[in-house]
Amino acid sequence: MNNNANKALAPDELFSINMSEITGNDNVFLNPKRQEDIVSIQFFINRIYTMQGFKPVQKGRVIALRQTDRGRLSSAFASALYLGKYSDMDNTERFLKGMVQAGHSYEPIRGESISFLYIGVSKPAYDHLITYTLRNRRIAGGLRANKPWGYVIPKEARNKEAYKAMMESQLAQCEELTCQADTKEQLQAIRSLYPTGVILPPFMFDFSEEALVKNVFQQRLWEPGAQGETKEIVQNMFEAVRELDPEKWDFLREYHGEHMTAHKRAMRKLREQRPSLGELVNKEKAQGEDILTLDVYKLIMEKMGKAPKSMWD
Image 1 (spheres, helix red, strand yellow):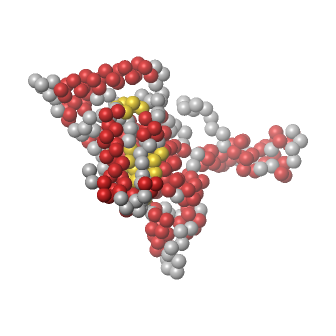
Image 2 (spheres, rainbow, N blue to C red; image 1 turned 90 degrees about the vertical axis):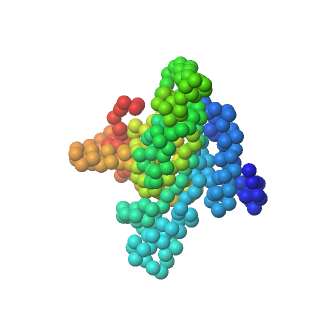
Image 3 (tube, one colour; image 1 turned 135 degrees about the vertical axis):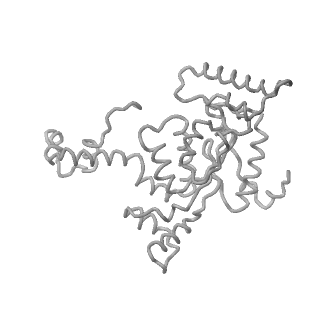
C-alpha cells in the first residue's frame, strides 16, 4: 500500500476511524478479523476524500464522507438563480432565512447531497435506509458475494443471550457449507441462509439534503414510531451533518423537528374543537394566575399538543 498519499497532510489532519464508536455498542458483534479491512478503508478515505479537502465526520457507525454544498455556496448560488437575485449570489443566508422561513421551495438543496459510509450496520437498517437514497449504490440484497461482517442483536430483544447463540450457530453453519471440499457452496447461494440481523460489509449511500430533512430525519428520527437500530443510525447521521454545518441543520430542524408533530396536532385540535380563550385558561384562572402574562405557546402546546399514548409508549 502506497503511503505517499498521506504525506501532504499533517497527522492531526488525517481522518481516523474510531473503532470504539463501532464496537462499543453491546448489541453489535463485529468480526475482529475485519480490523485490517477497516485500516485499509481508513487509508483510502484519507486518500480520496481528506486529500481533496473534505473533512469526514464519524458519529457512531456512520461516517459522513463529503457534502456537495460546502460553505453553503452552491445552495446560495441556486437560491439566487431561483429568486432572480444576481447582485449577491454568494448570500449563504438566503436559502434558510429567505426560503425555508417563508415556506418556499427547497429546490436549492434538492441537488445537494451528502455521502455516508456505514460500518457495522445490519441488514434491517440497510433496508430501511435504501428507501430514501439519491443514487443506487446498493449491493444485491446487501451482500452479493460477500460474507457478513458479524451480527447485530435487535434493541427490542429481551433474551439477548438466546439471540447471540442462535446467530452464531447459523453463521457457523453457513461458513461450514462454504468450506466443504465436496460441495463448497457459492456465496451467492449461501446468502439465502444468513439470518436477517447480519452486519453487512461496509456500504455507502448518497442522500439529497432535501430528502434527509423532509424524509429520512423526519420519518426515522423526529416522528413517533422511529425506533431500534435504524433510529440510532439516523441519529448518528444527523449528528454528523450537524457537525458539518451546525447553523444549517439546526435551522432545518427547527422547521421539521420533533416539535412539529405537536404543532400539527395542536392546530388540528384547535380547528376541530374551536375552544374559546376562556376554556383554554380556566384552570390557570382558577389558580389565581395572571392570564395576561401566560406564555401562549406553552399554553396551547400543553392543552392541545399532547399526544395520546400509542403502541410505542
